[in-house]
View (cartoon, rainbow, N blue to C red):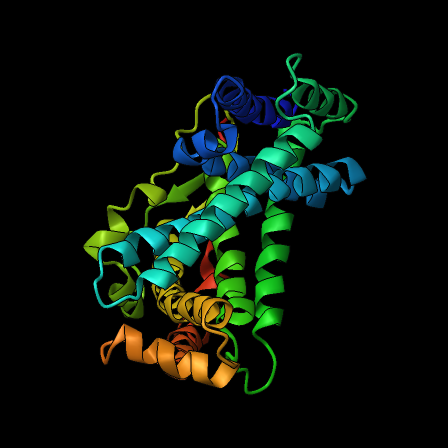
Length: 332
């Protein structure tokens, strides 16, 4: 029985990251180049692997790796946050130029923060010092055999789902904040969809012809054909964690829908932030002005939180997460 392919998974994405960093190091603005060339996706995969293996092996080295990858991913996320809204608002004449200018300045500030972090943490060192240190740490791991590793991934996945259910298990749970509630729940759900991508075939989807009628509303054309739902082929793997395809699609729908509601709320929040920084408005006045700027079609934060409540209560009442995992399978 072969060893778990953990080292190969890490090395696959480390090679990708190393290639991106090498190219970025030859640019005038490495951080901007990494942002424009989607380094964040590779970092998401490495962060997912670190989270997964920290749960499986209970070794601090994986926790430290997760922190390292997350630091870069978070800064790239902050760049994306300000840049996307700055570009959107630049096309909207109803948005005051001062707001767009503020967001552009914040984008540049976050890019500079990433450039400084890349240097301080030696991600751009000529000898690939940071990547080499990571590989050395990984070589110290006593990797499980493939079958045992898949069983451990199964247990980790169950624990991750239970953690989400506990997060929402409070009596009369209600979303009160776009960033700490809606965004946090979406992030927890999103990891469940990222692990199959990061494990490169170790997690597969199983098709079922018959499924509960309530799933139909989630199986939209947009969801079923989404590139995010195309799982890597099994490859040389002989042991797998199987997930139910239709329940996986339902999960994907929830992630996408919460994302739309979150982004709508963040549009108001980022304008409010810009107004407070540029016009010296207090919290109440800045929020009122933000709603005026975004117009009548913009839902208020309470309305968005209420919509998030409704779809989540429906989704979780149907016990969709509890039916996501089918179990472990093996090719003889």
